[in-house]
Amino acid sequence: MKITEIPCPGYEKVVRCEDQKSGLRALISVHDSTLGPALGGLRMWPYLSEQEALTDVNRLSQGMTYKSAVAETGLGGGKSVIIGNPKTDKSEPLFRAMGQFVQSLNGLYTTAEDVGTNVQDMVIVRKETKHVTGLPREMNSSGDPSPFTGLGVFLGIKACVEKNGGKDLKGVRIAIQGCGNVARYLCEHLSKTGAKLFVTDIVAEKAQMMVDKHRAQFVPAEEIYDLPCDVFAPCALGAVINDDTIPRLKCRIVAGGANNVLLSEQHGDRLRERGIIYAPDFVINAGGIINVSVELEPKGYNEERSFQKVNNIYNAVKDILETADREKIASNRAAILLAERKIAEGRKRKAAKAR
Image (cartoon, rainbow, N blue to C red; front, top):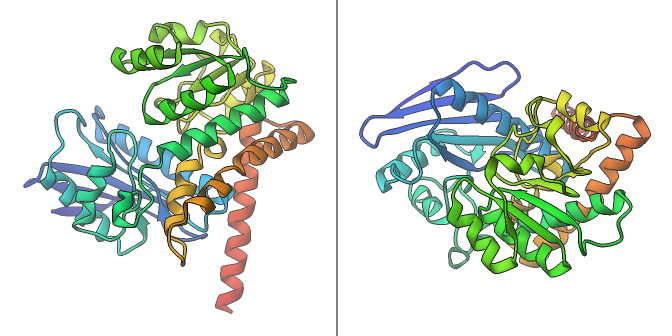
Protein backbone atom coordinates (compact mmCIF):
# COMPACT_ATOMS: atom_id res chain seq x y z
CA MET A 1 0.00 0.00 0.00
CA LYS A 2 1.39 3.37 -1.05
CA ILE A 3 0.13 6.50 0.74
CA THR A 4 1.29 9.94 -0.37
CA GLU A 5 0.31 13.45 0.67
CA ILE A 6 -1.11 15.94 -1.83
CA PRO A 7 -0.41 19.63 -1.05
CA CYS A 8 -3.72 21.53 -1.18
CA PRO A 9 -3.71 25.12 0.12
CA GLY A 10 -6.50 25.72 2.62
CA TYR A 11 -6.78 22.04 3.52
CA GLU A 12 -5.34 20.48 6.66
CA LYS A 13 -4.39 17.16 5.08
CA VAL A 14 -5.11 15.49 1.73
CA VAL A 15 -3.73 12.01 1.05
CA ARG A 16 -3.81 9.50 -1.79
CA CYS A 17 -3.72 5.72 -1.49
CA GLU A 18 -2.87 3.12 -4.12
CA ASP A 19 -2.98 -0.56 -3.25
CA GLN A 20 -2.21 -2.92 -6.10
CA LYS A 21 -3.23 -6.06 -4.19
CA SER A 22 -6.85 -4.94 -3.59
CA GLY A 23 -7.12 -2.51 -6.51
CA LEU A 24 -7.84 0.40 -4.18
CA ARG A 25 -7.38 3.92 -5.53
CA ALA A 26 -8.65 6.39 -2.97
CA LEU A 27 -8.35 9.88 -1.54
CA ILE A 28 -9.00 11.29 1.92
CA SER A 29 -9.42 15.04 2.39
CA VAL A 30 -9.43 16.65 5.83
CA HIS A 31 -10.44 20.26 5.40
CA ASP A 32 -10.45 21.51 9.00
CA SER A 33 -10.40 19.86 12.42
CA THR A 34 -10.57 23.03 14.51
CA LEU A 35 -13.91 22.04 16.05
CA GLY A 36 -13.04 18.35 16.43
CA PRO A 37 -11.91 15.25 14.53
CA ALA A 38 -13.00 15.32 10.88
CA LEU A 39 -16.08 13.26 10.07
CA GLY A 40 -17.47 12.63 6.60
CA GLY A 41 -18.68 9.84 4.37
CA LEU A 42 -16.88 7.53 1.97
CA ARG A 43 -18.06 7.95 -1.61
CA MET A 44 -17.41 5.36 -4.35
CA TRP A 45 -17.74 6.70 -7.88
CA PRO A 46 -16.28 5.97 -11.35
CA TYR A 47 -14.40 9.25 -11.67
CA LEU A 48 -12.86 9.82 -15.07
CA SER A 49 -9.56 10.98 -13.56
CA GLU A 50 -7.82 11.43 -10.25
CA GLN A 51 -8.06 15.20 -10.70
CA GLU A 52 -11.85 14.94 -10.96
CA ALA A 53 -11.88 12.82 -7.80
CA LEU A 54 -9.59 15.28 -5.99
CA THR A 55 -11.80 18.25 -6.90
CA ASP A 56 -14.87 16.40 -5.67
CA VAL A 57 -13.39 15.14 -2.40
CA ASN A 58 -12.05 18.59 -1.53
CA ARG A 59 -15.37 20.31 -2.26
CA LEU A 60 -17.18 17.70 -0.19
CA SER A 61 -14.65 17.97 2.63
CA GLN A 62 -15.06 21.74 2.90
CA GLY A 63 -18.82 21.31 2.85
CA MET A 64 -18.54 18.89 5.78
CA THR A 65 -16.58 21.44 7.79
CA TYR A 66 -19.33 23.99 7.28
CA LYS A 67 -22.06 21.42 7.86
CA SER A 68 -20.66 20.31 11.20
CA ALA A 69 -19.94 23.89 12.26
CA VAL A 70 -23.49 25.12 11.65
CA ALA A 71 -25.01 21.97 13.16
CA GLU A 72 -22.68 22.27 16.16
CA THR A 73 -21.72 18.59 16.09
CA GLY A 74 -18.39 19.25 17.80
CA LEU A 75 -16.61 17.78 14.78
CA GLY A 76 -14.53 18.94 11.86
CA GLY A 77 -14.92 18.27 8.17
CA GLY A 78 -13.47 15.54 6.00
CA LYS A 79 -14.41 13.23 3.16
CA SER A 80 -13.06 10.25 1.29
CA VAL A 81 -13.59 8.78 -2.16
CA ILE A 82 -12.81 5.47 -3.82
CA ILE A 83 -12.28 5.68 -7.57
CA GLY A 84 -14.33 2.80 -8.93
CA ASN A 85 -17.71 1.55 -10.02
CA PRO A 86 -19.84 0.66 -6.97
CA LYS A 87 -21.85 -1.81 -9.06
CA THR A 88 -18.90 -3.88 -10.26
CA ASP A 89 -15.74 -3.08 -8.29
CA LYS A 90 -16.66 -3.74 -4.66
CA SER A 91 -14.84 -6.46 -2.73
CA GLU A 92 -13.89 -7.24 0.85
CA PRO A 93 -10.15 -6.73 0.15
CA LEU A 94 -10.95 -3.30 -1.33
CA PHE A 95 -12.85 -2.08 1.74
CA ARG A 96 -10.38 -3.67 4.14
CA ALA A 97 -7.62 -1.73 2.38
CA MET A 98 -9.74 1.40 2.71
CA GLY A 99 -10.03 0.72 6.42
CA GLN A 100 -6.24 0.53 6.65
CA PHE A 101 -6.03 3.84 4.78
CA VAL A 102 -8.42 5.49 7.25
CA GLN A 103 -6.47 3.99 10.16
CA SER A 104 -3.26 5.53 8.84
CA LEU A 105 -4.57 8.97 9.85
CA ASN A 106 -4.76 7.87 13.51
CA GLY A 107 -8.19 9.34 14.25
CA LEU A 108 -7.84 12.63 12.39
CA TYR A 109 -10.60 11.38 10.06
CA THR A 110 -13.62 9.17 10.78
CA THR A 111 -15.63 7.76 7.89
CA ALA A 112 -19.23 6.68 7.22
CA GLU A 113 -21.35 5.65 4.25
CA ASP A 114 -22.06 7.97 1.33
CA VAL A 115 -23.01 7.76 -2.35
CA GLY A 116 -22.01 4.36 -3.69
CA THR A 117 -21.37 2.79 -0.28
CA ASN A 118 -23.63 1.34 2.40
CA VAL A 119 -23.74 0.12 5.98
CA GLN A 120 -22.42 -3.34 5.06
CA ASP A 121 -19.41 -1.78 3.34
CA MET A 122 -18.71 0.10 6.58
CA VAL A 123 -18.81 -3.19 8.50
CA ILE A 124 -15.88 -4.38 6.36
CA VAL A 125 -14.00 -1.08 6.82
CA ARG A 126 -14.50 -1.51 10.59
CA LYS A 127 -12.42 -4.71 10.49
CA GLU A 128 -9.34 -2.55 9.93
CA THR A 129 -10.14 0.65 11.87
CA LYS A 130 -12.30 1.85 14.73
CA HIS A 131 -12.69 5.22 13.02
CA VAL A 132 -15.96 4.45 11.26
CA THR A 133 -19.57 5.33 12.13
CA GLY A 134 -23.02 4.47 10.83
CA LEU A 135 -22.64 0.74 11.51
CA PRO A 136 -25.66 -1.53 12.10
CA ARG A 137 -27.64 -0.94 15.28
CA GLU A 138 -26.80 -4.44 16.51
CA MET A 139 -23.17 -3.27 16.66
CA ASN A 140 -24.19 -0.51 19.11
CA SER A 141 -23.91 2.06 16.34
CA SER A 142 -26.29 4.55 14.75
CA GLY A 143 -27.18 2.60 11.61
CA ASP A 144 -28.12 4.04 8.23
CA PRO A 145 -28.01 7.88 8.39
CA SER A 146 -30.36 8.27 5.40
CA PRO A 147 -33.62 8.47 7.41
CA PHE A 148 -32.22 11.38 9.40
CA THR A 149 -30.95 13.18 6.30
CA GLY A 150 -34.35 12.70 4.66
CA LEU A 151 -36.13 14.09 7.71
CA GLY A 152 -33.86 17.13 7.82
CA VAL A 153 -34.44 17.87 4.13
CA PHE A 154 -38.19 17.56 4.65
CA LEU A 155 -38.05 20.05 7.54
CA GLY A 156 -35.90 22.41 5.48
CA ILE A 157 -38.35 22.29 2.58
CA LYS A 158 -41.16 23.06 5.00
CA ALA A 159 -39.24 26.07 6.30
CA CYS A 160 -38.66 27.34 2.74
CA VAL A 161 -42.31 26.91 1.74
CA GLU A 162 -43.37 28.89 4.80
CA LYS A 163 -40.80 31.56 3.95
CA ASN A 164 -42.42 31.74 0.52
CA GLY A 165 -45.82 32.38 2.12
CA GLY A 166 -47.19 28.84 2.25
CA LYS A 167 -48.97 27.43 5.30
CA ASP A 168 -48.41 23.74 4.62
CA LEU A 169 -47.22 21.38 1.89
CA LYS A 170 -50.58 20.16 0.66
CA GLY A 171 -50.71 20.55 -3.11
CA VAL A 172 -47.15 21.91 -3.27
CA ARG A 173 -45.43 20.66 -6.45
CA ILE A 174 -42.03 19.20 -5.60
CA ALA A 175 -39.60 17.94 -8.27
CA ILE A 176 -37.11 15.45 -6.84
CA GLN A 177 -33.90 14.78 -8.77
CA GLY A 178 -32.44 11.45 -7.72
CA CYS A 179 -34.29 8.60 -5.99
CA GLY A 180 -31.63 7.14 -3.71
CA ASN A 181 -31.90 6.39 0.00
CA VAL A 182 -32.31 10.00 1.16
CA ALA A 183 -34.96 10.73 -1.47
CA ARG A 184 -36.81 7.57 -0.49
CA TYR A 185 -37.26 8.80 3.09
CA LEU A 186 -37.93 12.34 1.92
CA CYS A 187 -40.75 11.13 -0.32
CA GLU A 188 -42.32 9.26 2.59
CA HIS A 189 -42.54 12.47 4.62
CA LEU A 190 -43.72 14.57 1.70
CA SER A 191 -46.40 12.15 0.53
CA LYS A 192 -48.03 12.22 3.96
CA THR A 193 -48.53 15.99 3.65
CA GLY A 194 -50.39 15.80 0.34
CA ALA A 195 -47.56 17.32 -1.69
CA LYS A 196 -47.52 16.51 -5.42
CA LEU A 197 -44.32 14.68 -6.27
CA PHE A 198 -42.41 14.55 -9.54
CA VAL A 199 -39.36 12.29 -9.66
CA THR A 200 -36.45 11.41 -11.88
CA ASP A 201 -33.35 9.23 -11.67
CA ILE A 202 -30.75 7.95 -14.13
CA VAL A 203 -31.76 4.49 -12.88
CA ALA A 204 -35.37 4.22 -14.05
CA GLU A 205 -36.21 1.42 -11.59
CA LYS A 206 -35.48 3.68 -8.61
CA ALA A 207 -37.81 6.38 -9.90
CA GLN A 208 -40.49 3.80 -10.65
CA MET A 209 -40.47 2.72 -7.01
CA MET A 210 -41.40 6.27 -6.00
CA VAL A 211 -44.07 6.38 -8.69
CA ASP A 212 -45.62 3.14 -7.46
CA LYS A 213 -45.38 3.86 -3.74
CA HIS A 214 -46.21 7.56 -3.59
CA ARG A 215 -48.19 8.14 -6.78
CA ALA A 216 -45.39 10.38 -7.97
CA GLN A 217 -45.15 11.39 -11.61
CA PHE A 218 -42.06 10.35 -13.54
CA VAL A 219 -40.11 13.04 -15.41
CA PRO A 220 -37.23 12.29 -17.84
CA ALA A 221 -33.89 13.28 -16.31
CA GLU A 222 -33.11 16.18 -18.66
CA GLU A 223 -36.61 17.65 -18.36
CA ILE A 224 -36.59 18.03 -14.58
CA TYR A 225 -35.03 21.52 -14.74
CA ASP A 226 -37.80 22.78 -17.04
CA LEU A 227 -40.68 21.44 -14.97
CA PRO A 228 -43.04 24.10 -13.56
CA CYS A 229 -43.00 23.42 -9.81
CA ASP A 230 -42.82 25.08 -6.42
CA VAL A 231 -39.73 23.26 -5.13
CA PHE A 232 -36.80 21.74 -7.00
CA ALA A 233 -35.16 19.19 -4.69
CA PRO A 234 -31.76 18.00 -5.98
CA CYS A 235 -31.00 14.71 -4.19
CA ALA A 236 -28.34 13.23 -6.48
CA LEU A 237 -24.86 14.60 -7.22
CA GLY A 238 -23.62 18.17 -6.91
CA ALA A 239 -23.04 21.16 -9.20
CA VAL A 240 -26.52 20.87 -10.74
CA ILE A 241 -27.23 24.57 -10.16
CA ASN A 242 -25.05 26.32 -12.72
CA ASP A 243 -25.06 28.76 -15.64
CA ASP A 244 -26.86 26.27 -17.87
CA THR A 245 -29.60 25.18 -15.46
CA ILE A 246 -30.49 28.38 -13.59
CA PRO A 247 -32.22 30.03 -16.61
CA ARG A 248 -34.30 26.87 -17.06
CA LEU A 249 -35.64 26.66 -13.52
CA LYS A 250 -39.38 27.24 -13.11
CA CYS A 251 -39.51 26.99 -9.32
CA ARG A 252 -39.60 29.34 -6.35
CA ILE A 253 -37.42 27.19 -4.09
CA VAL A 254 -34.29 25.03 -4.44
CA ALA A 255 -33.94 22.71 -1.45
CA GLY A 256 -32.63 19.14 -1.54
CA GLY A 257 -30.38 16.50 -0.05
CA ALA A 258 -27.41 16.63 -2.46
CA ASN A 259 -24.04 18.05 -1.42
CA ASN A 260 -22.46 20.98 -3.26
CA VAL A 261 -25.62 21.77 -5.19
CA LEU A 262 -24.13 25.01 -6.49
CA LEU A 263 -21.33 24.75 -9.04
CA SER A 264 -19.83 27.88 -7.47
CA GLU A 265 -20.86 30.35 -4.78
CA GLN A 266 -21.85 32.94 -7.40
CA HIS A 267 -24.69 30.68 -8.47
CA GLY A 268 -26.31 31.37 -5.13
CA ASP A 269 -26.22 35.05 -6.12
CA ARG A 270 -27.90 34.18 -9.42
CA LEU A 271 -30.70 32.34 -7.61
CA ARG A 272 -31.23 35.34 -5.36
CA GLU A 273 -31.38 37.66 -8.38
CA ARG A 274 -34.11 35.45 -9.81
CA GLY A 275 -36.06 35.56 -6.56
CA ILE A 276 -35.55 31.84 -5.92
CA ILE A 277 -35.21 30.80 -2.28
CA TYR A 278 -32.21 28.52 -1.73
CA ALA A 279 -31.73 26.30 1.33
CA PRO A 280 -27.93 25.95 1.64
CA ASP A 281 -27.11 22.28 1.15
CA PHE A 282 -24.82 21.90 4.13
CA VAL A 283 -27.56 23.25 6.41
CA ILE A 284 -30.58 21.35 5.08
CA ASN A 285 -28.87 17.98 4.58
CA ALA A 286 -27.05 17.84 7.92
CA GLY A 287 -29.38 15.21 9.43
CA GLY A 288 -27.12 12.29 8.60
CA ILE A 289 -23.96 13.82 10.05
CA ILE A 290 -25.90 14.93 13.12
CA ASN A 291 -27.06 11.35 13.64
CA VAL A 292 -23.61 9.80 13.40
CA SER A 293 -22.10 12.59 15.52
CA VAL A 294 -24.41 11.60 18.37
CA GLU A 295 -22.79 8.16 18.18
CA LEU A 296 -19.46 9.78 19.08
CA GLU A 297 -20.79 11.59 22.17
CA PRO A 298 -19.40 10.46 25.58
CA LYS A 299 -22.63 8.67 26.56
CA GLY A 300 -22.88 6.88 23.23
CA TYR A 301 -25.68 6.81 20.68
CA ASN A 302 -29.17 7.94 21.67
CA GLU A 303 -31.81 7.99 18.94
CA GLU A 304 -34.13 10.38 20.78
CA ARG A 305 -31.34 12.92 21.17
CA SER A 306 -30.50 12.51 17.49
CA PHE A 307 -34.06 13.28 16.41
CA GLN A 308 -34.12 16.31 18.72
CA LYS A 309 -30.99 17.70 17.11
CA VAL A 310 -32.17 16.97 13.56
CA ASN A 311 -35.44 18.82 14.27
CA ASN A 312 -33.34 21.97 14.75
CA ILE A 313 -32.69 22.02 10.99
CA TYR A 314 -36.11 23.65 10.53
CA ASN A 315 -35.07 26.66 12.63
CA ALA A 316 -31.55 26.70 11.21
CA VAL A 317 -32.87 27.06 7.64
CA LYS A 318 -35.33 29.77 8.70
CA ASP A 319 -32.60 31.69 10.52
CA ILE A 320 -30.24 31.53 7.53
CA LEU A 321 -32.95 32.79 5.15
CA GLU A 322 -33.83 35.64 7.48
CA THR A 323 -30.18 36.59 7.87
CA ALA A 324 -29.74 36.59 4.09
CA ASP A 325 -32.73 38.90 3.67
CA ARG A 326 -31.54 41.22 6.41
CA GLU A 327 -27.98 41.41 5.05
CA LYS A 328 -29.18 41.47 1.43
CA ILE A 329 -26.89 38.59 0.47
CA ALA A 330 -27.41 35.13 -0.99
CA SER A 331 -28.41 32.48 1.55
CA ASN A 332 -25.38 30.30 0.80
CA ARG A 333 -23.11 33.23 1.63
CA ALA A 334 -25.02 33.86 4.85
CA ALA A 335 -24.56 30.20 5.79
CA ILE A 336 -20.82 30.27 5.02
CA LEU A 337 -20.37 33.40 7.14
CA LEU A 338 -22.11 31.67 10.04
CA ALA A 339 -19.94 28.56 9.66
CA GLU A 340 -16.71 30.54 9.41
CA ARG A 341 -17.66 32.57 12.48
CA LYS A 342 -18.15 29.37 14.49
CA ILE A 343 -14.80 28.01 13.27
CA ALA A 344 -13.06 31.29 14.18
CA GLU A 345 -14.58 31.10 17.66
CA GLY A 346 -13.26 27.54 17.92
CA ARG A 347 -9.75 28.69 17.02
CA LYS A 348 -9.91 31.36 19.73
CA ARG A 349 -10.96 28.80 22.31
CA LYS A 350 -8.11 26.50 21.27
CA ALA A 351 -5.60 29.34 21.45
CA ALA A 352 -6.86 30.38 24.89
CA LYS A 353 -6.45 26.82 26.21
CA ALA A 354 -2.94 26.62 24.77
CA ARG A 355 -1.82 29.71 26.66
